[in-house]
Amino acid sequence: MECTVSWTGGAGTRSGMGFVAETGSGHILAMDGAPDAANPANGGLNLAPRPMETLLAGTGGCTAYDVVLILKRGRHDVRGCSVRLTSQRAEVEPKVFTAIHMQFTVTGKGLAPAVVERAIAMSHEKYCSASIMLGKTARITTGFEIVEA
Image: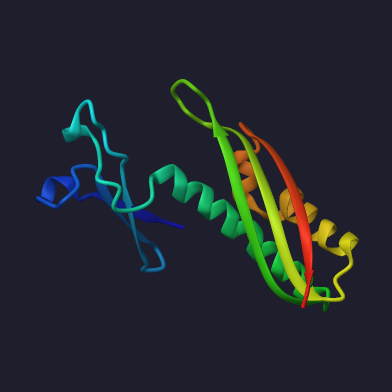
């Protein structure tokens, strides 16, 4: 897997702290820094997600993918899955994630709570590389609700 991240701020773009990532699979992802009122030249313009937001979003995508795939492979009638991630970061540099809560909403027909709970646990214990990696610095907790479809 590879990715090239390029600073766009030096190219006369609107934001002095903008970046574009091109993934190995050929996709583009824009990122930008937060505005810095004290030193505007060192801040972004809030034109795209922050790099740490993309890390959190990628982790949510990784685990949601796992949960859906595990349920589908178990021949459960899953029809939707979303996960809301909330996080806390360290106060000082490096401002790593110290706590992440993932609240899943899984929609389906006849989904048993034990089956959904097991799919989430399997993702976090075995399959989701992103959450397992972030679990080295952050306490990760999960919760879920099932919506009957």
